[in-house]
Length: 230
Length: 236
Image (cartoon, rainbow over the protein chains, first blue to last red):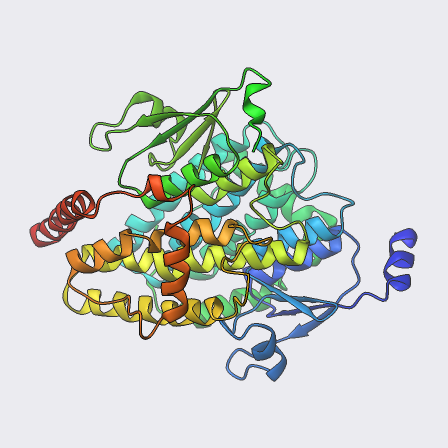
């Protein structure tokens, strides 16, 4: 750690992260930066009153997260993760082998293309529709289980790109508790549940999770009018 | 362009459909690198066991098989190609430039390609919404194309094409056909002179020109897709 701080000091690097405390996307970036021991300034954005800085650094989408490194902005969470991995090369998040890397990118995209939209939908739907979406998510979780197999993490022995992108599952577990749904259970998904426990127990990941009680309230307030379905 | 593939017993196979702009992007990437490959035309109505085992998650093309190992998802495949065959780089070397290229590729996929596809297979309000979003995306891309000056006619560096150009290539033929089939207007040389210029330059490239498909053939096919999708919705 000392060697890394020395490096950042001598290079006078300025790293800023614009995010929001409950955002699955900006929390990914926090995990990556902390895994690499990169010092950064965190700026909490109010999305109903976006700062001029955010609008300047992400004029097109006006969204968080945005990473600003020595004045240069990078947007889109998976793009930012790759940037971090290519800029600070120690403690790699992505595999070095091109095929393994391709697999990691495929599964990270799966999280955002499939799991995330379904997770949002499940929180916003009720009754029969919600049941249907829960089934859909459970099929996706089964797919992820067969991808994980015996591994400790999707990245192998330690957290990697896919595990970071899979933080969506942590948000899903919060939603299921806040809204009274049963989606990811130890009974139905023993393998994935084991992974989930290791993820939330990981020293770095743990530090980057939204405070649980606040997160539960946030979800209840935002999506709370759905009737629970068992 | 030396072909690295000749040195080893490389086996590169591409599962595709002749009309797909996604598959075409992968072909462009392979040709750009001079990689020898076997093209396998897939029947997407009767999917082959090879396709189903190679891409069990999405069951779609393109799928690249390298020495038997399958890779799916167009952008993932292109990055794999770039990292496996390192000559003639498709993505820039500098991390910030790479991030910009990936940002724009993602923008083209999500804000343009996906909504154009929606516009093809919908009508009424749904189609209007998709067309509006596509127009907004075109405005943004026109702004980016306007930044190309002097010798730089493509988004890739060094007077050549790169990642963003390959991804944007669906502008060449497909969008025109989809406009006509879907009954809406998206491309306008007056409003988008720089995109128009980019297309004109792209289609003349010796690498690209022979790969482009006859408009009539694409029209018939996309007409079929539109009709099938609208009929499916009507039945629900």
